[in-house]
Length: 364
Ligand SMILES: CC(=O)N[C@H]1[C@@H](OP(=O)(O)OP(=O)(O)OC[C@H]2O[C@@H](n3ccc(=O)[nH]c3=O)[C@H](O)[C@@H]2O)O[C@H](CO)[C@@H](O)[C@@H]1O
Image (tube, rainbow, N blue to C red):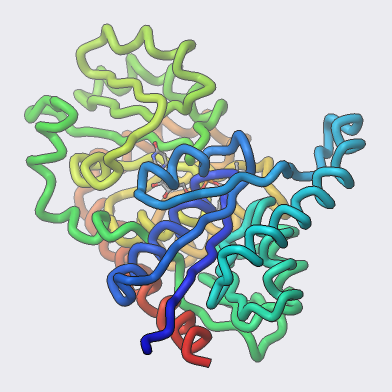
């Protein structure tokens, strides 16, 4: 009789942890159409909406991270942790996973910890050049750790690390043939260049302020703006939709078409965004968030800039933006070299390489 395969996947909090999890699940589903899947996320977080949209079942744990600023909220943390560990234990007992996969974020802590304790093989996927606390703790006991950057031996046992790159959604691999479809989808004007503005899965306040201050500059350059500002900020910026050459979106569900339609991209440097932009291969300006652990977005962006694949502007230096953008707009040679160099850094087989490792654990 064939072995029944049950795949437990946990990761979330932000898109940067959710989409890799979904990409891995989709590839596993292709290889094991009969497998059962269960996602475990954190109640009230983005994954509770995005995972069912992708066609998978999800259970939510009552868990959140330690708050550095709102210290009082931490009083409930030990209760949340204990309750999540018990809940994870119950879910694992019932679901009987063949393997457990963690892609980072709070919920994956108790889930993978419990899975490991109950003898389930575990694999974690670390997206960043500097790991988050959950993966750092889980890494010690995991069977395999798939990473996207060099030099992670500082945090994880070297013998368990494999550099695979970050999983990206399948539909992003075929954007080259979708430029016209993308322009139609977003109703873009064919006679203007398009700049796509991305603030990461949650939107970025500082990037939004910059774009607002530069709208007349873009207009003067005949550049239309496809602007993902984030759910938190959309009420503040949606008024600019009245301007014909500006489109404000809280969130883009068709990133493939947005990337395909763009001529230039301005983006945060979260791990998946950077991996996707390598595949997309368009002239990119990174504005890394300075507010993340160990300034890892600056390091993510730096890895690309070091290979002459993108331009990085620090938040503190955004007054240089108009001159940097105008110079790029006028320099076709620079646009081409940036596109080629960033594309060379793409690791498009990441998902498949990670799933090969998961298969080894399944067959163990
Ligand atoms: C502020 C913060 O904590 N950011 C972290 C978070 O970023 P964040 O959640 O923004 O993650 P990433 O930049 O890695 O990925 C964003 C993902 O959301 C998708 N997307 C984005 C916007 C949109 O409108 N539609 C859409 O589908 C992108 O295509 C991408 O797949 O997790 C990353 C991965 O651990 C970290 O590197 C970031 O530092």
